[in-house]
Image (tube, rainbow, N blue to C red; front, side, top):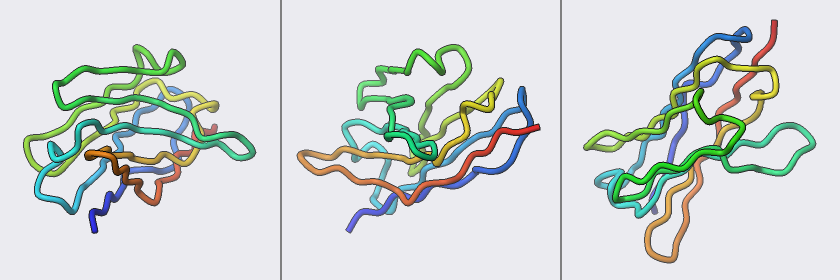
Amino acid sequence: QVRLTESGGGLVQPGESLRLSCATSSRSIFDFSSVAWYRQAPGKEREFVAAITGGGTLNYADSVKGRFTISRTLAKMAYLQMNGLKPEDTAVYYCRGVRGTAEYWGQGTQVTVSS
């Protein structure tokens, strides 16, 4: 069973940065045709944040364009670099991987932006 594990969340002040990591238990992060980050704030639906396809195409939600960057290594990791964090970025962040017809989700990591 493939597992995705997020890490790197925490409490930061507005304007600060965080880098979230997503580690796969499979052979490589490239085993997935796409890797994406989603987030869910309290009382809200889970929403798309950013994605990277196997071919390297990047896609971002309008709310994070210019502030967040998704990337991956040649090994087992994907990242979400978050700069200029705002209180409205507060949420649990999830990593999602798609392989064939299957999708895999991590357990999430909490990001709190507050002064």
